Length: 391
Figure 1 (cartoon, rainbow, N blue to C red):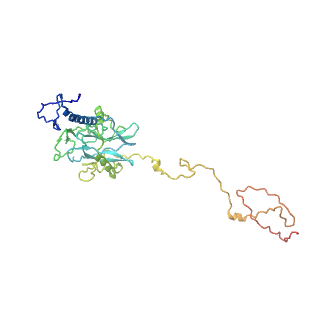
Figure 2 (figure 1 turned 180 degrees about the horizontal axis):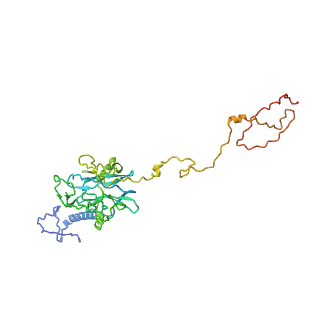
Figure 3 (figure 1 turned 180 degrees about the vertical axis):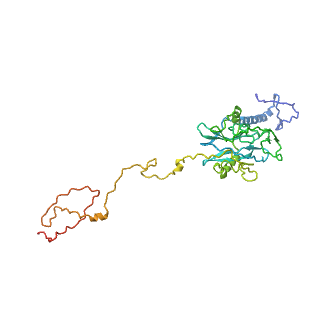
């Protein structure tokens, strides 16, 4: 664009019907550089701005994602083995198989999420299953699955039905149509015609272990292609997948402590459908179920918070305080059997014989209890009468 003129490209002669868009009675052309009349410049500029906006949006969508698989939860012991079960039939074209796996509940228990068929969120979408990975800290971490144009690394776990531990052999996309491999996918040709058959070679000694690394886990490591697939554009589990997980969590029979590694509902034809003829039960557990070792209960569960005694230390043990002895008192019977104490006269008192006397003070004996003597009248001696003092 220079001055007031706009340079555009044209593939046809002027006046020829080319099928180009017409805006405001003016034909827009795209090919050779010609000098457009000023009347056309405003409409062409609007179209250029729209094309630029569309190009920026496409570039943002095509930008590769750099984040790695999210770690959702970490557990101190590994999940049970994958159970043996059959795949239910695919309900309709466009549905993708998502294998079952062991998930973790907030109340410290593994539960089985049944495998199910899920509608692909966009044409060309392939599902990379999540998997448990043994970390350097000695814990088992869950790596969430995702949707993308390629299948990435899922720990080398052989989920079956096309997921052999590496890639996906259950089908492929051809433009906007998905073609199913009938050798590993349960597809009926009455409602799905995009099918083919290709033998998938599986190792007969394949293990049913459900985690990567650690004791007896798979030893697979991600390849360069799988790392690239992980960095490509992707989306997390669809909304119906998340609802499927929440529904499975509320089923007590799907917990490992209840089913011992053999869930009653191993797979379903559609997400959240846990009843009906298309529900598949596990035929057997992948390995003998071994319950986790009993762990000491956490302090907040073993000892619920209680009001602390005033003399309790922060650790919960009673604080040592000096012993305070209570005054020693004798039983009432002993107190009554004691002889009455001798009364001490004061200087202004006179002896019964008429003489004023003062008895020397007695030495106070140590006694655990100080008690005022009870006043007792002195009795006259036998054979003598009490005389009145002289006036």
